[in-house]
Amino acid sequence: MMASPLDALFVYGTLRRGDVRWSFLEPFAADDGVDDTAGGTLFDTGLGYPAAVFDGAGTIVGTTFRLRPERLVEALQVLDEEEDTVAGLYRRVEIVTGRGVAAWAYAYGNGLSLTPIAGGDWFAR
Image 1: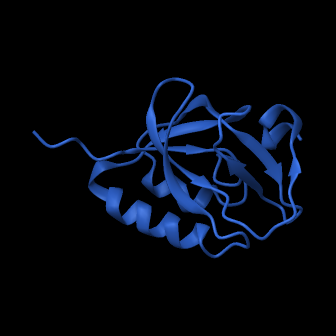
Image 2: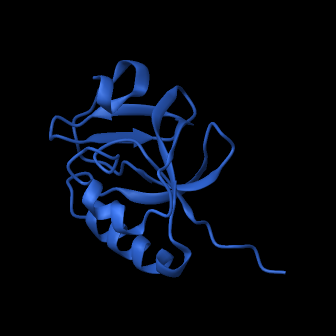
């Protein structure tokens, strides 16, 4: 039996509902999302969006969404392309959230000056 494809996405910054890049995720979201966390450190890039390092050292606050199964491949292509256009070259990684959900998330690449966000919540900075 084949494992089902990973169909959840943990978002912690501008892809969250109400922020500037929510419109990229909204057409693919299969639910309203659930408040969630991930192990790691959240940083302010100084460029209007955060960066996450999923190292388990702290707690990152965010939301986990299920993606529409019939649009999963398209969703990941669109989001991968968008995340690769920003400075820092983010990459999609597999994590397990605080709620125990296996999910995709976008991890920081390199090349930016980062300032840790106390509390790990982009919306509460």
